[in-house]
Length: 275
Image: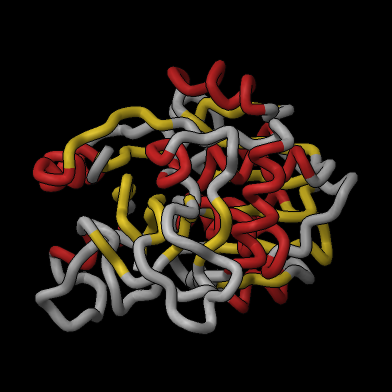
């Protein structure tokens, strides 16, 4: 059992709340947390009360609470460099980025990746993870986020409101699509033969993939303690840093979700649960 110090809000929260995700309601929302061990099961022999952990929770439990049960397969030691508020911003977004880039996208050092939506919760971590892996990173963002993503390490930025990315980006090994729709359709034009288009939102067209001798992959991120631990090591090494735009007390979670749903949000919004 974890005493929750902080939790973050994600698009999956308001999508679940509004009924567009097939979950049985009512349900406690919140997929990622940072906190301290309160009680350990007998098999958690390496942990003790007070140990700081961060975790991406399974669908059956929610982190928007004072306490939550966390499985060993979901949690890792909280990075020393981060406060609980900062750590809570990482798990779901970081694991989504990791699995999209490396597990499904096969990104390697020296390759080129285009990340759509590089200033968002998943995108801003994906930029840093890709750079840490030695990739060339191009990203689409709004004009007000260009400096932000350059500071994260992006090699090439595209203001999607005033530029067509397919006219300035080319020959990438991987497109990491966090936008879908027309953006996904146009992304085939920038892929190398044999490249991969990975989406968190919709299944890429197999017909278009075949025409371009490419792969199209859609996936849902799954909790993974090993992935989270590796992200934590990169954070403590100074190679990855989450950006927290705003914090809200747990009692104002509705306001936090409303802001995430209706405004342009850079990085993450985090709920402060307890001191």
